[in-house]
Amino acid sequence: MNYSKRIVDLLLCIMMIAMLGLTSCSSNNPAVNSQNGSGGQTGKKKVLEISWFEGGNGKEYIEYAIKKFQEAHPDLEIKADISPNNAETLRPKFVAGNPPDVIMANYSNLDYFALIADGQLAPIDDVLASPVPDDKSKTLEEIFIPGILDRGESNGKRYILPGFVHYYGLWDDKTLFDKKEWNVPENYDEWVNVSEQIKKSAEMSPFTYQGLYPSYLLRTLFFPMVASYGGTAAIDNIDNLVPGAWQSDAVINAAKDIRAYTDKYLMDGTTALNHTQAQMEFINHRAAMISCGTYLENEMKGNWPDDFDLKFIFAPVRNNGNSNKKYSWATTDFISIPSKAKNPEMAKEFLKFLYTRDVRTAAAEKVGGVYPIIGGADGFEGVLPASVVYANSMISKDNVNVIFGKYEIWYKTLYKKAQDSLTGLVTGKYTPEQFAKEVEAEAERVRKDDSIVKH
Image 1 (cartoon, rainbow, N blue to C red):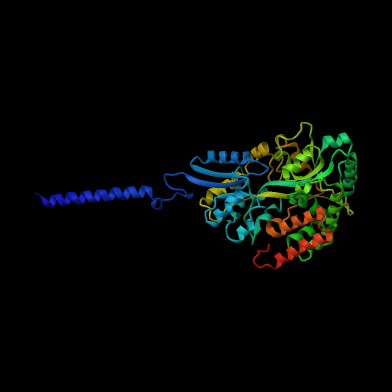
Image 2 (cartoon, rainbow, N blue to C red):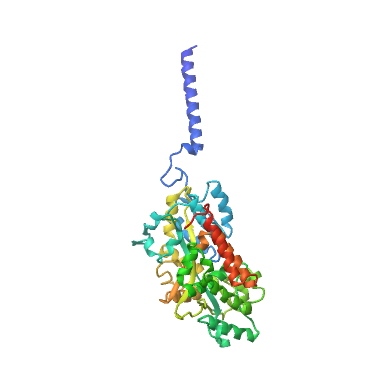
């Protein structure tokens, strides 16, 4: 027997088995696979994970954007969580160090600036410095309304891109007002006068708002009234935690106006209504006016009577020697990239893609959305809701001051205290002076709390 040959054959067999085993292990072990340039694995699709808030604008536009981005990147697998409650699913992912690549959440429910302070969001200055994908003559930063990007700045870097812009004001049904020969109020005194007429008609209440969410009243009426008394400097002082800002004459006078009006003309039961309930009261003409943002028509789609002519009204503030000055509070959606995103490069490309003409057209057509870019509504007049076109035309006038307030995104407890205290003011729990004192006390607590990052 040729033992030498048998030993050689046996060794060859062992070597072949070992090689097969290594091959098998390698094919099932991603750790030993070479990586491609965008974070995915060779032989597998790259993945882009998106978490998106489904609010008043619905989800059609973001689904369209994802579909078109997918077509442009056929090798990409996109996983999207589009939900009204995505902030709740995002929190544990950040805690676990496993966030998605792109996020857009309701910033009232997700504290973006706490995430920034904790190093959980990535700066996007390089995205802003990039050319607009379909207009290489401009950078992304250059197309935005001046000042809007400051809302997403911290320590000299920018972390947040603004999504749709929402302008706040009163709303009425022009058809109804014309029929009843009621004048649309231009200032506080006219607002009281027409509300008195409506009240005497005994057909409906003059005014309602989304009582469970007093932020609507803060944005639509309170802060424009503050600005009418103290200029936008009074708002800046609130944003910057200036001592005594909440007890200024401007704040107390605005509180007095709110209290005096709501005491006589607010629809009974308003403070117990959520947003859709209050808006249905308005649609059904149980209230003649309501506070809301420019998303109102789309949010209540399918409920509007055929002859309802929805119109935007600037906050009816006191003249205070300048009857020509108008104010509107504005908010935007917040879009960011987590610092631990697995595919940050593709996330950046998606962010830029959102501002292309194609996506902006779809946003206008599908949900009446307008981005806070210069001339954001231009060219979309034929597809945007009529109320949005009208509001944007009003906002663009030279005598209008748009307020991009920051305190509500920087200091969450102060924002909540302002809302709760405003409800106390409306219900008679607080006098205007007590309201101011309550909120100033919380501002002082925030000022002294070294654990809260100041902006």
